[in-house]
Image 1 (cartoon, rainbow, N blue to C red):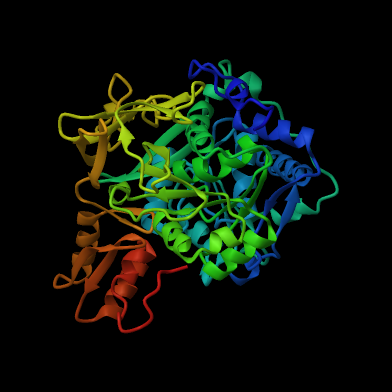
Image 2 (spheres, rainbow, N blue to C red):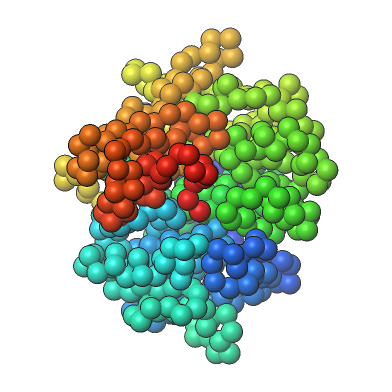
Length: 521
């Protein structure tokens, strides 16, 4: 762990009293071990986006973060301006999140498959001032898309991009990797009178019946989420981590970026999912900690490949936590840590015991690592009178965003006076273990491969195009649920949905199911 004792360095026994920001943690590592390998791309990077795979030491990453932060400030962006980020799971994604924080701005990562409808709704709600993306991911031109989004949002002043041959009007960033002269980041600390670690650092987005809702967190809340995963996973000093999950949500940040920083290790990124390539990366990068979706982790474990490749710890993300209690027994020799993700409200990590079954989720304080005398409380779980899971504590936001939104009548992230957030996930009491079992998702919501949708909104969008078309959500063993659409003219409905800018997963529901059954990249 960084500085040998992360609990003293970044998360004191009294939550909310720390002073280290996420960027400060990174800078300490870069100063201490500049030549250590920090970040690596998947070897197939050129197959899905611009540029050869990058391999950066901490010194090289520090240089690029400083360069990006400096350019953002010289563009005239003021302290606490909100910056949208839409990038695949590549080195630039991690660098950009850290650079935005270093520049005194607020990072707002957007899910990669969000298109016009969701992106405009999200960035309009938070008054985004810039959008950072890349030239393309697969066949989709993200820079052109970002320019169209910016043209419809008055507050956005800049579109910035990584990659080659960017459209006119896009501020290029690739030149910073090779620039000979870098300009310092202008000071901004004097503009923040309070503890910098308690300042808003990140905005992610929840999806509910009211649409897209921003969720803001400070550094300490992000650290609490990351510590919950890192300590329960026993991710050790100088860990070599391989992650299939992008840092585009609170769970993505807690599962990927924070364990990397708290272990001062090496983070290898994987995109899009490819089992053979994942195995190659595990071997080539000697990664002993693997982070990936829970259903996929269990399937890989059945093959025995993880043990052959030297994996020691598997951290499994469950975006549909209601499926965890009925999940298969883990038979491998590797440590297996389940992470139940309750949307953007928070998450709970639990290591499986010798029997290989998922550990029960206890009521009350959630401490990490469980059973340790020095465990740190990172959250508190309760069951509401309505029979749903509620969270509060160090990782859970204390205020809605933007400030005052709760008085406007607009949809917002609801937090009661005690700091309690009702996640909407239904649960029952397991009397034998004095714990809760998650039994169902929030009413009216479906989860497809990590993306959440209000089913009613999807059905209304389809009916506006074709009143006779139907759309249902069916269980899927890997991605949680799958959208299945039926229409007399499938291709017409697909084209119309794409034209209005919905998530490609919705348009894909109307594909010809006689063809290859694959999700969009």
